[in-house]
Image (cartoon, rainbow, N blue to C red; front, side, top):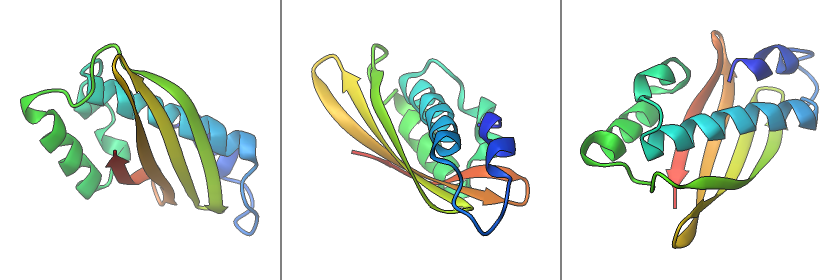
Length: 120
């Protein structure tokens, strides 16, 4: 998720360019899907997660992985709501169904953080 930090660190009064928001969203979504499928350990992305999101991911992955290992992202849509917030919708394809995941990414003092996660 650090790739998007420099691109989105510009003028505070403007909405970030859509390509920068898209790059940030792609990286964040990919990392979340990798954790939820068991391909990446949670501790690798922990520094970018708010405490509630980290707790949710810990709970979801504690007993088993909530997504099939063969899960792939179909599409990622980013919507910058202001210069420090990007809302993300991810369409996920599992072998037998499609699911959606939403994220909220917020720029805080130390960089970009995922402050909201919902897996549907």
